[in-house]
Amino acid sequence: MTPQTLQHHPKPQSILTLKNLYEHGHLNLEPGFQRQSVWIERDRAKLIDSILRNYPLPAIFLYRNQKDGEIIYDVIDGKQRLESIFMFMGLMRGQFETKVQLPGDDEVKKVTWRHLCKQKRKGLIEGYEIPVIEVDGEFGDIVNVFVRINSTGKALTPQEKRHAKYYDSSPFLKEAARMARRHEQGFLDMGVLSTAQISRMKHIELICELALSIHLGDVLNKKSALNQIMQKNDFDMRELNKAFRRCGAAINRISRMFPKLYTTRFAQVTDFYTLVVLIAKFEEEGLILTDRKRNRLAWDLLSTFSTKIDEMRVKQKRAENIEAGQEIFRQYLLTVTQNTDEVHQRRTRQQILEGILRNLFLRKDDQRLFSQEQRRILWNTSEDRKCARCHKLVTWDDLTIDHVDPHSRGGKTGLKNAALMHRACNSAKGNRR
Image (cartoon, rainbow, N blue to C red):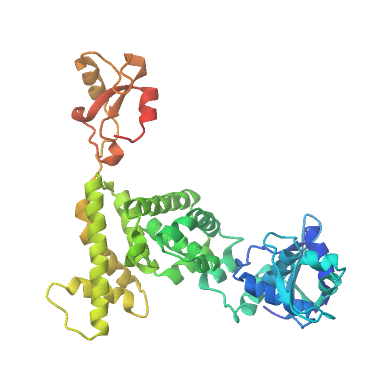
């Protein structure tokens, strides 16, 4: 950025003025480059306490621009201060109270906005002036200002910086954000991410990383690959959507296969990443777990392997000797305890995990649909030509051939696994056995 393209103008504004801008839609707290809120109620209460005591506050930075002929101020810095003020005043959800000794009072009391209005003292808030700096310049310069300002305090995570720089231009990042929102609760339930991590956009970073790895068919160097794909912005939308669908399917599959994942080390992001990429690879190859017994065995193997790695970690800390047959646990542990998580470490981790789980999975029949020949054979050899579901007569025009053991669960497309069925009955059955 240069002095010729970036200008800034200090303009102290009262909270009443900022309130009016917000109520009339001229103050945008959620521009594309902004991060999610990370303040808790205690932080917000302290801010209101400072205002009521007339303490000085840091400046708020606004980006003045036009949208559809209207002047809009995008908040570059100060979003959470403004949010807190508007929440306290009841303009946003999350109204709260604070404890403070108001001017002229003898003791500390709980104070709400309603309390101030009843006492005709809301001017203590509305009349307070906040230093406001309007910044003018190219959008890229504004984003750089945002990143630089937020390099101190609760510094921006790498994903928050990527979000700021590329959100408006990256369909990849926008789709990742949508998908991350859908999987928020799942990540929490599996213990993969905490609420605090999600507030710092770690779930979006994880989805970006997984989707891109699945698209490329290999593990990747996270930082360089994500930045490169967003800078290029040349993702084919069809390939993009396919990658995200496969990513979502793999995450859902893991949540069903391993509902107690949170009890193992595979709930940690590095290990979870490996597990998702591996399951997506199995799905692409048509590999599936065909029954509960195999699923249970997969869980037992994964859980036992996790425990052995944890035991190895304890032994390393105590400088104990490694017993025979434990090399694989030491090798895996090395990939997650080093200072970096390079591509070769990720590949080693995936290869070890694949060696443990692959033999439990069976390949789906390459033939998805019954052939015309099979259809005629089944029709002509059926004794009563009744639907296997509703047991009523089936006509040739309403005939479908059903996989008794569903194809999606490993059922073969052969006559021993075939049954006559009405179209509607087949659709209603779905993939149930």
